[in-house]
Image (tube, rainbow, N blue to C red; front, side):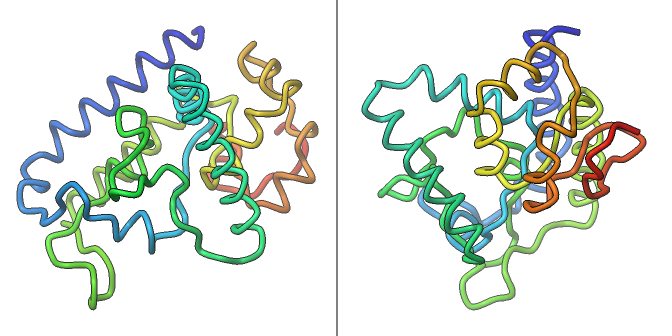
Length: 203
């Protein structure tokens, strides 16, 4: 399956999730400008396929906007490595999303039926949480030669020319990024080691 087809399947996974989650999300208090998850959640994990969709979205933006966002992604990576819980690099000053159309599933699945401020964070239906978990597995299955991890770490990988060429050609070479993967908690999506820490060798 080529990556154009994979990206189409990714969009279909998003669409099916939204249909299935709609009854639960109708009770959500979330509104445009409500950015608690973007400023307090701190750990938006994505798959490399989602990262590729984001990269393509960024390339379609005006050069100045793209460079500003890429700079914020690099700062997000640095802050995350320093142990901080950084604000999402794609959060705009008006507290809306700069890449809303290409936002990853971690963002699409977040909502809350109670106010997040002053509480223990977002609260979602158990059924919706289970649906999200199943959706993540489905997403990883079509990205089996890819990785999962924090947003800015995955985007960093895709910014490396050698990794980008290898990944988008369907290659699979964990040893290429073994040290970075272990240090940054990346997981291989490959079915036999899904959700396990990188070992540096293909199973």
